[in-house]
Length: 148
Image (cartoon, rainbow, N blue to C red; front, side, top):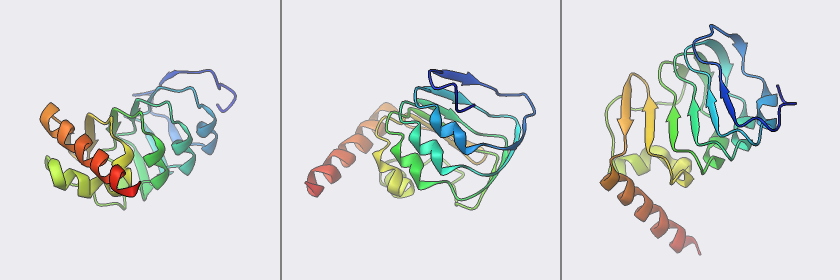
């Protein structure tokens, strides 16, 4: 799969694919959309997912992933939609709608994901409404300015 370096869209949802997600997935650096939801993928997410910096949509829901969500996903600064629900991650993911400061606290190292508009986690769908998203981006810019 790593040899498909010009690939921009990969939709393999609902195919009952089994096994681990290979670390070679990180070689698909042109990928903008990755849909692997509704399969039987298991094990930890490879840290190499963080190399897919062109991604705007990442859907990994309804699989059997385990372990922690890799902090390298914070490198996906073009991400607009992230779907992680119905997996077995060790990381506590809230199951209700979160917004504002609570959203900032939950994102922690993922605060760099300033383009995120939709986050699906656990059994609930969170959608950042325009006002909340503006607040999140303003907070990010404020934190970024303090670091300089």
